[in-house]
Image (tube, rainbow, N blue to C red):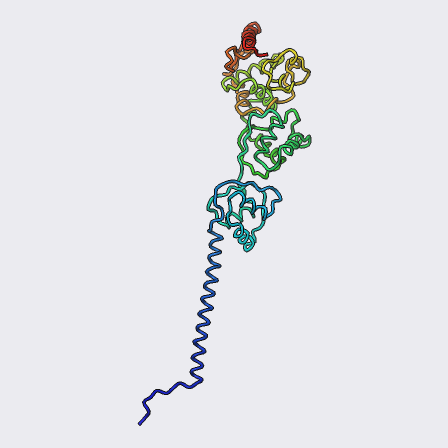
Length: 363
């Protein structure tokens, strides 16, 4: 009768099975380790692409020559980045440690990838440069320097550089006519020379064929129109009066009568705050003193506004024509003007204004 008990596996079979079990265990452990490592790496990659690096909205200017470490400290100290260690780690592991100067708008919730690559590739945000009410180049330099990296002295050196001025085809006297007051989108890293080049493009764009044709009808160049407009702007801030004031000056020029414009005397003396032009001011010898010298002064006495330029050009329209040769401020101190065709009429208006100055004690 055969033995009914199961036969025990041979020793080599038992060893083989044990080895298989251990191999499976090792593979399982390795698989788990790889899964953990892969998961960690995957999470890190996900966090780099989509995790939050920037914790508040704002704008930051990065000066030329800023290092990556300096940028990191700027972002930390300004409250844009909380975890500087993580910021540095992502930059190193993804080889985005380059920094380019510029103006950067930072958005709350932006990822490490978005923020780091913006600085690395120089994806800066344009600034809106606005200027108006500019009398002198140093004033313009001061305003422009608020919007770009260069300081006001650096800007002024370019605005007064003879070679830079000559390159525009203008003279030092007519150079202010290059600038058209407006708002322009520029980069913070724009150099002063690039600013002048941009203004020349904007000047050429502004002076359309329609505007140039009006200037030709009046018999003047764009620079001469800008000069008249600059005087108009200094005489009145009321747009409704500008074309009429411009017409007075153009009428006087056509008849060979000296302009006798008080703003040109103030410019010559170098004091735009003068409230009452006196004989000592009128005697000041300067080509800008239109009481002493007939014709237009050498150039604009300020950077004229678009409104003043267009108002001056509008005198080319026959419907705006008039015979006024004089005007003076109204005695009611409204800022508006009384216009006259004859000298006796003008003298009465001027006497009324002078009497009011005396009554108010303005010297």
